[in-house]
Image (cartoon, rainbow, N blue to C red; front, top):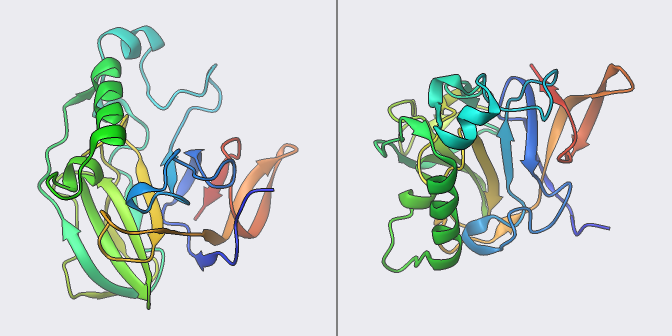
Length: 229
């Protein structure tokens, strides 16, 4: 039984169909560490469910492995990201450049370095989170949405926002293996010292037994085909 006590319920922060390759519905800590508030964090990507291996990109696997993939060839890159809750924006950092394409070996090396050697006292949090938005939902509950597309953030610090408002677009900034949305709840507005807070989504659908089924207050696994509109 996974540890998941009294999760905070928020709205799913994306629209359309998604897969969560890293989710607390499958393992805790979902990202293999408790650092940077990631204990209960989610990653979301879009994939081609009809191709072998359900790749997240439109090109062939050999190109992905050896020459890299342009960001525009990823299904989720540039998709709109929505506020999961009512709240106030307490952090909004843009301007962190994205690489023009993914590179398997370089991205793996960067991920390993940041996972094992990131020092919050001297390293820039954007080297990990990339372009991000942090929303204060309630006392000691903050939502972080990370790796956003450069130049896409549409909110600013101090702004009151409503659940469902567009805040930016899915990108590949910071410590990102491929374009995706990293989403987490945490107990501090400072990612470098935050602890993760359990989170579930108030409603979404999963494709099961050849039909879409509504899930309420759910936590998807890494096998679930998720849909929300």
